[in-house]
Structure formats: C-alpha cells, structure tokens
Image (cartoon, rainbow, N blue to C red; front, side, top):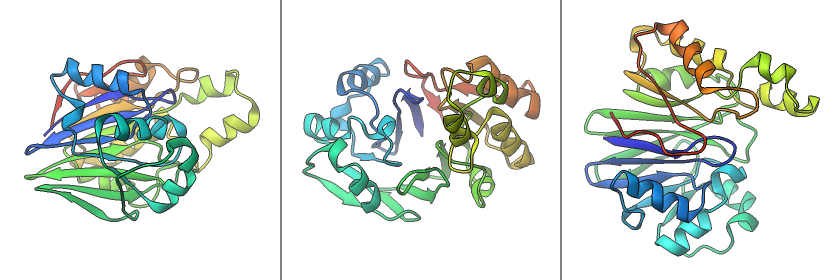
Amino acid sequence: MKTFSLQSGSNGNSIYVEANGVKLLFDAGISGVQAQRRMARHGRDIHEVDALIISHDHVDHVRCAGVFQRKFGVPIYITRKTRRATRCAMGELNDVRYFASGDVLQFGRVSVHTLRTAHDAADGVAFVVACDGKRLGIMTDLGHPFAGLREALESVDAAYLEANYDPDLLAGGPYPPYLKQRIRGDGGHLSNEESSTLLRACGRHRPKWVAVAHLSQENNTPELAMDAQRRTVGHTYPVHLAPRYDCSELFDV
C-alpha cells in the first residue's frame, strides 16, 4: 500500500491511497488543478482514481468535490447527511454512491472501514483502509479521543493522525473566544498533547509510523506537533508531516 497527502489543514484536505491496483482519494478540499499537479509529482494520474470518498461536510474537505467529478469523472462516495449538508457547495453530481457511517466499502481486495467521529459535522467519519494484511488510518477532524478511537489506531500499521493545535498558542492567539472554545471542545480538534497521548496509550500496538495532519497555521507549527509525538513515544519513533501547502512524501504502509 502506498499513500501521500496532497494537502492537509483548514485551507484544504485531500489524501491519496493505492493498493492492489485500486486508487482512492479521500476528500477534495483543494482545486482540481492543484490535485492534478500534486498527484503527477508522484507519478499518479487523477483520471485513474477509482473513487473519491468524503469524510464530512466542512468546506476544507468538500470544496472541489463537484469539480473532481465533473473534470476527472471520479464517482463520489458520501453519507446522505453529508450530501444534504453540502448540496450547495458541491452542486449537481452525476455519480453519487451513498454509505452510512460504520459501513465497510469494498473496492476489489481493498476495504475502507468508516468510523463515526465526534467532530461537529453533519455526519463525520474517519477511515481505515485495509488490503492484503496492511491497514492505514486516516484520522483527522476527530472532535476528541472518543470511545473506539484508540482501538482503531492500535489496529493499523500507519496513520495520518490529527495534531491540530498547541494549547498555549491557541490560548494566546488571535481567535475570538467562541472559536477557541469550539476548537478545544468535544466537537473540535485534537491538540498536539491529545494526539500524542492517544499514540502513547497504544503501547506496543502503536502504528509503525504516523504523519501528523490537519495542523493549524495560527495555533501550531510542524516542529511543535512532531516534537510532541516524539517526546511522548520516543525520539526514534518515525513521525512524518502532512503539510498545509504542499503534498507530502510518498509513504509505504
């Protein structure tokens, strides 16, 4: 299994995963031009993608989903609640395939397990992609470390793991009080500390690597997010970055 992040953060999200000839995109929060160019940098053609799977209705995840389908002919997999919440943002779609949170989607020998999150979305889900004994977690926009999240993280070989904010930077930053409360509330995002504590709780069952993802521009830095993980689980543990303004490296699972 191979994967890379096309972009990760509140300015837009999209993650690519391929396994056993199946090519999947998760979310479409960046432009079609950006997506096409960033995939090409890793030798991939967006026209060959088998499915676009949407995690939730927030604009940084669905902004260009309609464009992806109309321009590249990619079928969209989405829950009905998320589709209702995004009808204006996504426009008319020609090929929509519905699933319910908790379902397992099957693409040949590739399974995509969907896990309902606590994020303040209409019907948000995280994902575990499985094929031939390998498992990858796509775990962002989580709300808080909800029941079942640690077990899901323990079950995967690698994961994109949310580390959205540093509590001190958030507290002293420019956001209004209501937005600060939303971010650190039960429906918001995981902090660096929550993310690293979750990984530590996995003990010897932790993934072989994580890529910290969905970092805030105003309330975090890559160095803080990555250092929090390493301080908690050891400086030799592989911690990668899903950048805010570019694609990541190509990862093996």
